[in-house]
Length: 547
Image (tube, rainbow, N blue to C red; front, side, top):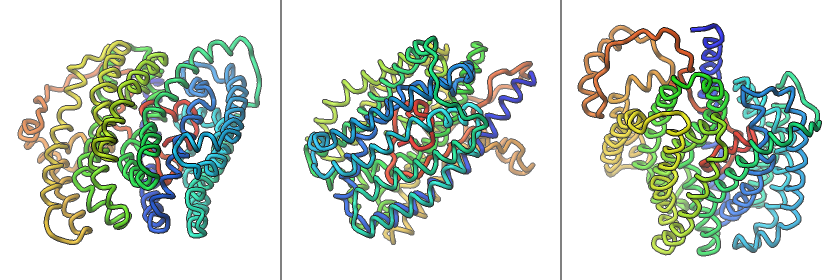
């Protein structure tokens, strides 16, 4: 192993560990915050904010025209392109923010509620902030400096949470969420700017523009289509049902996105720079993709199984009885969260391979399938039908297209990817059964939640012990535990369909960083994040944009 390769692997692992701790902390903080706010606001307020965020997501996805991701690519020189990227990002985000504020009222009517206009005007400020912070965020991403992103998240959480709670108590409803979003983004962006070693001023090199736009515009278009795909449900629900139903649906999507938001932040922060370097050794790319897929699904499928099995007591304990209708939607959407996080991994790999144009085709295919599926689902089963439409389209359309794209760009066979996914998938199904049965006892919701969680986690932990330990970097085990795992490996492997381990063969010169130890990266506090199928954070590359 060369010194450069060892250094890259060390930086990837160090960045991933920072991401793991910070994301867990911020997710827990957001859960606590929303548990408080959900008892102050009503579903109608959350529904109005959901519709405003749908429009904001459309605009913000193209706010810097996709060019900021070029700065995060390790194979490009930031000294040459960063000033031009800064100019494009600021001009584009400012122009789009102005249009969003100007047309707030007709947009609100089109979304199904005139009350959305006020939050839209507030959120236009968040769109304007995308540009100035795009390049500094990309610099931290390029250098795997997740510790500074963590600091930005912690610093921004305090003022944004205070604004949300105070304004919610004052009765500002949806506008409280909007102002919280803007304040959090501003605070995080200022910390990011203060953290970079070099602050690039706006500049303009005409010779760089064409290459940046060729790279960025397909990514921006794919991100825009992705946001249409993951927000069209809000628009259709707002026009078909009412804002209260949208609010309940948004809360369910918020909880279902825990795994996607957490793991997705890690992927956006680590996969793009790591795989853009790993592409220089194409023979090892398939192994890197398979290991990354195994690591991601090991975590995502566990969260999916537990969330689905325990949806009822989870909603009751965290948010109270007025949100009980979110439970059946959550049970369905947790499946979508697991599929979408795998799609997000494959999207990042595709970007790292320089094939941003392929993402546009993926999102176009998903949108064509999703709109009629969503209309039919809402007419059949309301908000639960909307969740089912997402699951079906993601599993039947989006994921197969991504699999084909990854196979063509990296040479990773479907059989190899299937072998990586099968063990955690079988273990997740068995864990779901255990959690569901344990949570079915007649008891208080807190007791049911604890019993189901312990039962499901125990089953999954026993079956996937080695993978879970590898995921957190625990490669050196106590002798007793290591012996027990070795002796039970044949039985555990048989239960989940994992082939017997072959004798270890020394690897003479590994050159691709092992992503199996990576873990989620932080996101700026968001009262209601939702998953996305292409990496918007990789496009806008600043800590706020993950939704």
